[in-house]
Length: 61
Image (cartoon, rainbow, N blue to C red):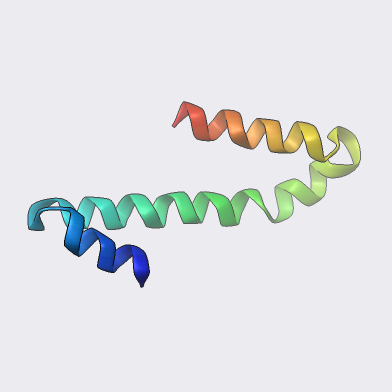
């Protein structure tokens, strides 16, 4: 709830929905990247390469 309150304070009314959508999209990406794909890639790549790949994806976005 804290980010939603912050968005109400920091952004104009017409920009709040977009800020909420970005927050949910980034959170969903984090949920997806921390479950089954990580479990499958961990034995082959190791955690350092996985975290590096996730960081690269975040920078790309």
